[in-house]
Image (cartoon, rainbow over all chains, first blue to last red; front, side, top):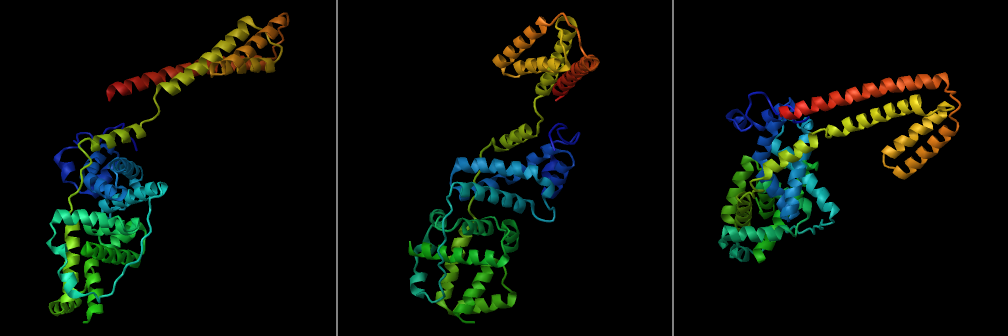
Length: 200
Length: 186
């Protein structure tokens, strides 16, 4: 696939038909010889891809580089995309793998201590936690700091589930993990975050 | 439903997989258990904040940057490289043939090949080595210039080489012209 033809004759990449088309239709158009259409797919998902990578890599320059690599890989392997699945999920799966490879290379992966707590906590102490009174911005900052204490995989699963809104089944496919493992990672991540944020 | 059941139901709820009947049981339990209610509220606050976390923008140039990299990656090698290589090869072949036919005399096909290899070596970067070989080959050929004992196979080779060189030069010229036209059209 190359850019020699420059797209479907008469088709404007920024035109309304492209802007209104679904991701799946756009991928088909790219595969059928209109690589310039890929620009719309980049534009649509760049914020989600970049945000995801920024939170995994925790470095803006690395995230920018990884985001570009993600799109290059997506373009190269676009014929492997299954249109029955959300394009965003496929793209973020590539982004995640790209980030994992990058972070593995940098040996930044951390271990994740298990911190599952049964439901026997002192109710009054939890109810009076300052967490609920915290402003959203402050909460987000504290949450981000706490997320760093999670393993890379747990953090990834948490972000994909709660920031990007993917289902556990989708995350399972994206990360090639079993559904039960995804749920366990999520449960541990929630508990860990709740504990950390409650005691701060 | 006790607190352990409520915890399991809460987890299923946050996983997005809580059955309606269990949701009703959970609601009833939360209504009468302050501990589980606090736990549920804390969790909802955290997950709600996460869901509303704004996305970061990679910058206004990001799309153009990606598309530029895609174009660069998908573009074939610059046209002048194969065209130049073809032209050099054709010129070398022509030059060797001309030297063989007009100036130098060789005793055998092996000598012709040695001479050609020396010229190619000089042209591809091994300049000193190539020039030495060329000098040696030329000197040796000149010392035996009284003999013109080129084998019939060598004559055929020279003829074929000349034809090949002409074809290659023609192909290189057409290739370059086609590429130039293509670039102007973009």
